[in-house]
Amino acid sequence: MKRLNNKVAIITGAAMGMGKATAELFAEEGAKVVVADFNEEGGKAVVNEIIARGGTAAYCKVDISNATEVAAMVQFAVDTYGRLDCAVNNAALKPDNNSFQDLDEAYWDRLQAVDLKGTALCMKYEIRQFVAQGNGGSIVNISSINAFKPTTGNPAYQAFKHGVEGLTKAAAFEYGIKGIRINSVAPGAIRTPMLTAALKSLGIEEKDIIPTMSLVGRLGEPREVAQGSLFLSSDDASYVHGTVLHVGGGFELI
Image: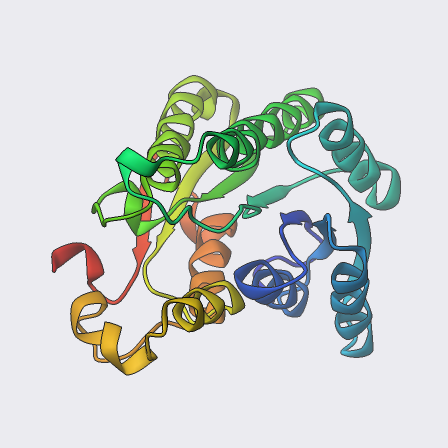
């Protein structure tokens, strides 16, 4: 049996990269997927791909830094499919690229609004819906290896991914008793358009970073991160709560 058969799932940041892979995998596993993203063209393309493969999906445009839009996203899921069963809060901006002494205050504020506040807003309205339904639910927050292992040149991104882990634990502590399981996935170096673009801008080739970013000799693929979110969202993880799943080829050990 498919692991998410007839479950209703919201995936934020689903127009590309890990979010896209997650939306596709959840649909393959039987979920009715809300593809939520600010990128309308990309989001609708993902929906079309899912439907063409026999899955069920609908697009919702959302800026997760805006509470009104986040509330509308959750309501869209309920209006479209009747309820909400699980959510993967994946949407985030690319890391900053400054040392502390050159910290970009404007980008700090934008990163905070999306990566930290945006994740908190998603959790707020998802949890409200789960509580109203009264039959539990599952939330997976996508954080980062940078919440556990510092690197140079992205202080804002690291700070807010630490914050995502804090949000995960705080909500898990409060809502487990209501049957709402809340966990996180911390990806390492994953071959996404965001990482590819970052390496290109720095003039670095993929092979140059592998020795310091993976113990298995390669970068990860978006679908491998999606598999982690699938496990945590499914009944296979029915007793997994308030924890983090590292999907990074051992990067946290280097």
